[in-house]
Image 1 (cartoon, rainbow, N blue to C red):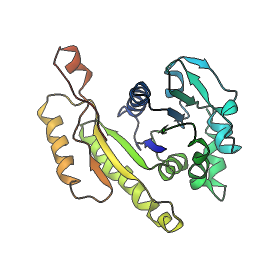
Image 2: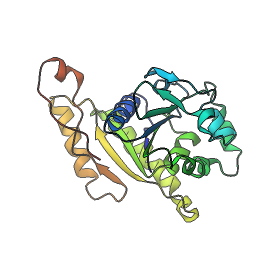
Image 3: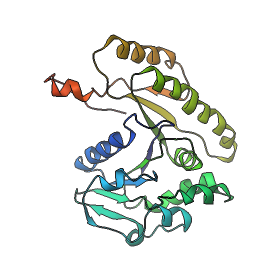
Image 4: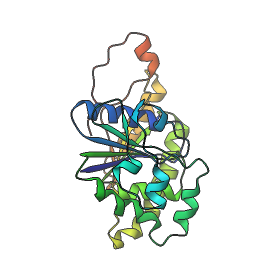
Length: 236
């Protein structure tokens, strides 16, 4: 079973959209996929219609260590695509994890309970730094970070995400290493500024030990609306 977290310390780069589409693509390919919505603004949880809704969600999973499928796993109408929905609108999990001895490692310890039923777990996270985001990173084997090609987002990535990685480095001594951070450029348009930022980021992180730029980019919707042909698959 593979575990991937879709992460960003800034809202707006298309994190949830990348997560829900990647999950559906994988499910359509026959990969048994579980989406976990750790964002207290539950956009991912409301994206797909459900054929069965479990009584519990991420709060029961994290706060109560509840891993029984009939209690926390909902079924979407898409075959092979399941969901643990977000039900923590007041961010109580953040406070709970801050005072728990295993706070940042709790998800890492819980996820093996699902390995017999799923091939892939995709975790959606909050668009801000928090202990919940740190927990998701430490529980994942890979991280995917969408970035829009604008200066503010690029600077926030370097300031926010990379600082987060540096702060979590000491936990490697406890067996909780941060995963490789796979950066995908989202909403890339044909402007010179966007392409300059894309190529600058690629050069900047070409030899970074923890950051990998995905060569495939996601075009801006305006390019699709204008009829431009785009025939590319996101490969990680």
